[in-house]
Length: 177
View (spheres, helix red, strand yellow):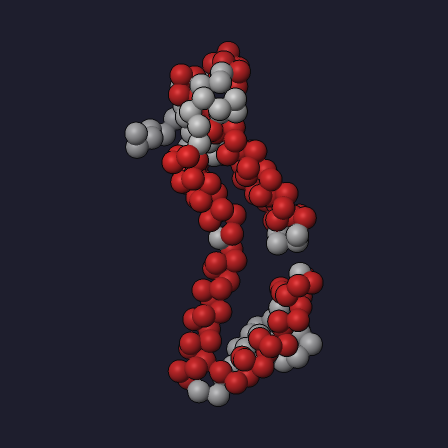
């Protein structure tokens, strides 16, 4: 396994010659590309070190991909433990605003591209529409839900995109609840 400087193949079996590391899209990581190339060249000399290099690199990539999810899980846990019950802003509203701030920060610091953000936005719009359809909500009950300060009293304490929507269950499918 070898990395060619200047955007060569990622490894000897790479079917996309000329592909460059995605790290080159984010200025703070550009300086690490040369170091990664050197480590890949060194690690590629022995099967054990090549495996260890790929294993660690895969783990780092997975951690990078989980930045938003990890931040949201941290916020969910923190707010469930410490968010004041009588706060002027409902907990789920706070979480929604926090998710927007995290997303804006990721776009601002170029941790995510606008193309990726567009795909995520479409996913959430479709998921929200699925939730409305699966929940058999009428426009009046949706209006009541949106105007209610108490999400549980309004009928559903869930976020707009639920695991059911993410799985893509068809309209009318029964939930596991």
